[in-house]
Length: 199
Image 1: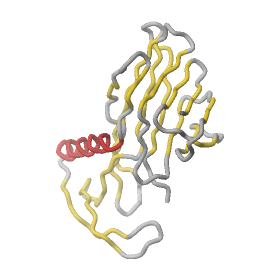
Image 2: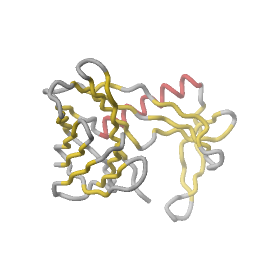
Image 3: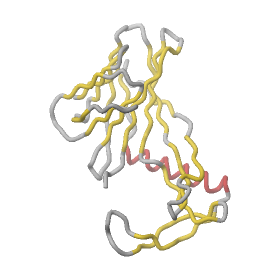
Image 4: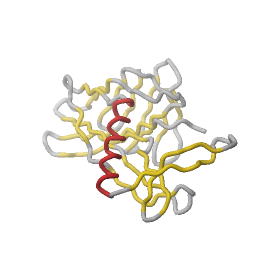
C-alpha cells in the first residue's frame, strides 16, 4: 500500500505499491517498482505516479482518508490530445484537454481508478472524433527509428495545415481530487499517472 499525505487529507493506493523519490520541482515523483509500504508527504498540488513497466500503470482502488470526516470528495480524470509536427520542429501545433470525467464513489471514500487499457481505448475514440471535427486527412510516411535504433518504419500520420503531423494522446492521465466542505469546493489536488516508458 502507498499513502500520499496532503495537508488536509491522504490518498491510499490499495492495489499497487509505489517506491519513489521526492525532487524539488512542481510535482513529486513516485516510481512503481517496490513491494514495501511507501509514504509521501507533500505540500504540492500534484503528484506524479510513473512506471518503467511497458504494460503501463493500473492503480486500482483509491481511498481518500480525510482529516475531517464531514469533508466530501469527488475524483475525475482527463487527458490531452496533441498534434505535433512530424519533423520535430515547432513541436506542438495543436493541443486540447478533454473534459474531466467523474469517477463514481464506490463506497464512502473509495474510488476505482480507470485501467490504462480502457483509458487508451477512450483516448483513440476521442482522436477519431477530433479528426472528423478538424477534417484531418490520414496518411502514412516513413519514420526514422528512435531509441538509437537504425532504419525506418511505416507510420500513420495526418495532414494538418498542409504539414505532415502525428496526433496522439499524451502519456499522462490527470486524476483531479476535489475537496468540498461540506458542499463548497475548498481545494483541488492532482495525481498525474504517467504511462510513458522511459527511453
